[in-house]
Image 1 (cartoon, rainbow, N blue to C red):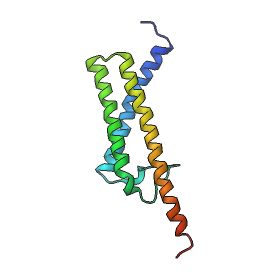
Image 2: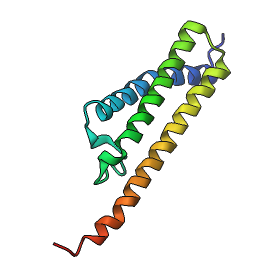
Image 3: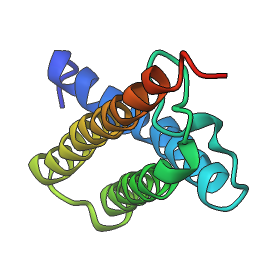
Image 4: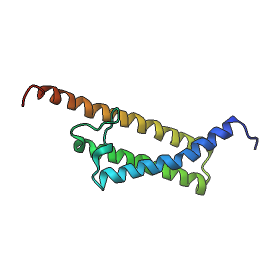
Length: 123
């Protein structure tokens, strides 16, 4: 095996799965079991006013994405899954997680905006 850019990128992707799965599973643990809603549907670092409403979606998303990442790591180490298979699984998981997180955050903050605007003038 010759060390070139593709080998380096493969190792970077594989090693990046470890911290990503850790953070995703830790986030799922905090949201689903410890009931900490400070990381739910973040947009610009702020959770929506009704974060508890979107907690199950964000928690399940993180749990599934973290589980797939851990499974991919296990398949690479134990079952020696082919390169194209595990990189497709890892890449799809990462992109789907980011897109779904964005969609949940956008939806949560979009629903909160009319309520906040409606109640601004009232005391």
